[in-house]
Image 1 (spheres, helix red, strand yellow):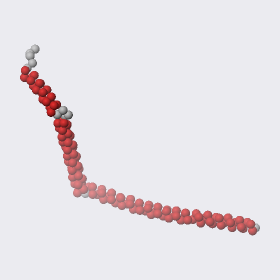
Image 2 (cartoon, rainbow, N blue to C red):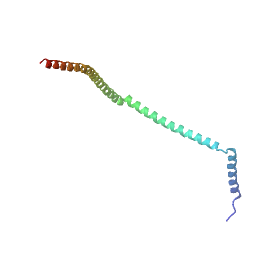
Image 3 (cartoon, rainbow, N blue to C red):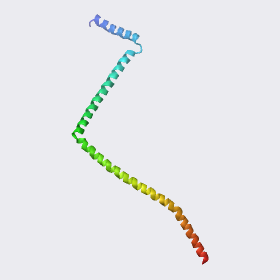
Length: 131
């Protein structure tokens, strides 16, 4: 076996000395944390840019479809359908208003009906007493 190369030994010692020197210069690893943080911000910015490009392309395609009238027809059909639904809702609301009015009338009839029944009983009793 040959003896270790004196140059490779110095390189290893030099790397250890640099690591030790760096450890004494930055004992809490702030420099490494700063580099990691910068890289994270870069990745986030890259992701946001990617999303922005995708969104822009989708908007461009949708705008092109609208300009070609493909979506315009569908929108017009949907608007017409919504108008029909709103008309039916208004009709239902009118029917509910009518039901509320009928309920009010019925509520006023109950006391009247009770009065009539009571008067009828009294008349019947009075008539039976006379007979």
